[in-house]
Each structure stands twice: as structure tokens, then as C-alpha cells.
Length: 378
Image (cartoon, rainbow, N blue to C red; front, side):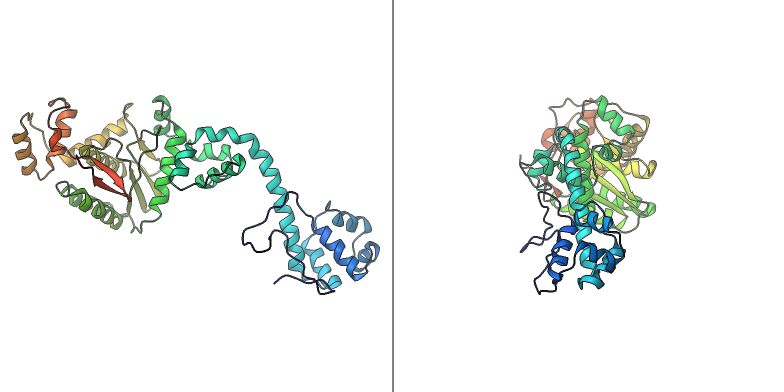
């Protein structure tokens, strides 16, 4: 309920426009001194009289009325006794005034950073309904910073272009860092929607064994099961479609000491690549530290990435893979090791035992729909 002047008229609090619940930002900030001046005029109190009643110098009162001096909380308490208007009202006026001034100053500063929008795939983020579009470039920039949970360009670079091996590799591979950051942020948001237990290394290793046994199931079945089993182990598994320019097929990081995230894009569509990507990221979680975010692209393999590659290969196909070149032999071998034949074909193609055009009828293609992998009709 708003305060009232001694004559009974209502005083609306600064920062709220009638009939709206969102903060109203005026074209110029209105100092609380304007409302104070109206109030003392209604009461028939002069500036000099107010000075005597509130124990402030005439100069200070004059500066407050002109908006050139801050109306302190102590002054607000004094005004409550003199005017009958509650102290919290005067405090809110001053707070709203200072916020309005700060917003105007911030807008002027952000206007100089508009070029940052060229570094971010804004159109795609708008299409994915995570940023609301607007023709006001400064407001759009504010929404982009809000999406990334940063206040300006410098803080975005500190948070999202951290000096990790992954981002150095991205720069060398002509990958768009802004697109990578946007894709990772989408993964962060998806991961917060998953209710995870605390990470348990033994439980996660058991989960990997169970998931390894799902490769022959339909993607519409194993996708949800993978998410649930990983969550029980303290790992949020999220599927986020690729953003143009990111070129990342997988990533993982620790969102808390007892909670990890695996993010997959299904960049190459082929199911065998999907399974390799999942176990590759799982390898990072079990083999490597908790401080880095691992973002995986093609090319530029490092020792750590090679270790994760070996982890994935050994989990999918333990032991030595025979040089199979007949589809019937491939299907029989896959059945013996309880693995989908398309995964074996993909490995043989990677090892150049099979040419890339042979065996593809045994492979399945996937896409992401409603946050889960589904098979693409051939």
C-alpha cells in the first residue's frame, strides 16, 4: 500500500508504473527531493523550517530537494516524524532514484559494447526461445549477458573464454568460441532440470556397464534410461543440438564437487559416434581432474583426449577387434560381444578396415527430439 500525503492524496513509489508489475524505468531519474518538495509545500513547511525541524543545514536540505545530495536512511527516519510519511517510503524513493541513475549510466556503457553481439549466435538463441528478440540493441545485449549470467564483455571473457586446453584448441581449429559458449550454456540450463544424486565412482562404473548393454535397444528406449541411470550416479546427461560454428560433439564438467555433467550434440548423427562420444566423456570424468571443462572437437588430439579415446574404445569393444570385412561376420561378432552391429561397422571404418561406404545399412542415424536421442528414418 502506498503512503499518503497529509491532505490524503496517494504518493506512488518511484519505480512502479500503475497497472504493471515490472519496474518502470523513466526516461530520466526522478530524485526523491521532488516528492519531498511537494510534501512540505502541502504541509506549509518552508525549506528553512524543514532544516530546523530535521536538524540539517539549509544547504544540505536544498541539495536533497534538487537531487544533488543523497537522502540517507537517517534522514528518512527524521522525515517520517516531520511529514508523517513512513521512512521506508523515502528510502524506497532514494533507492529507486539511484537504481534509475545507474541503469542510465549502464546503458551508456553497454552502448559501446554492441559489437559483442557479433560474437554470439544471437539469432539461433532467439529461435531456441532462450533469448527474447528486440530491435533495441542495448536491450538485446543485456539479455545476452543475462543468458550467460555475466555483467559485461570483460566478465564474459573471464568466465567463458577460460584459459583451458579445449578453448585454445577451438581457436586453432577455426571454431566459433561464442557458439561453443552458447552451446555449453544451453547444456548448463538443461542439466539444472535433472535431479541427481551425489557422484559415486563405483556406482558410475556400474552404470557404464549397464549402459554398454543397451546399444542393441531402440534409441527411444535407451535414451531415457541412460539419463535416469546416470542421474542416480551423480551425472546429469543432457542432449543439446549443435549450434552452428561450435563443431563440438561432446563436453563434460563438474558443476559441483559431487555432481558432473555430460553434454552431447549428436553432431555426426551416426549412432556409433554417439556411443563413442558418451564413453569418451565418461572417461574424462573417471580419469581426469574436476577443475577443467572438457569440450571435444575433431582434430588436435592431446594426451588427455587420447586417454579418453582409449577408455571409450575399450569399453565398447574389449580386446582386439578382428579385421572383419563381411557384413555377416560383423553381425555375428557384434552379437557375441552384445553390441549393436553398427558400432562395430563404425569402428572398422574408423580403422580403415572398411571403406566409408560399406556397412552403413547396419548403422543407425540419430537426432535430438525433446531432449532425447531418436532414430532418424532411413
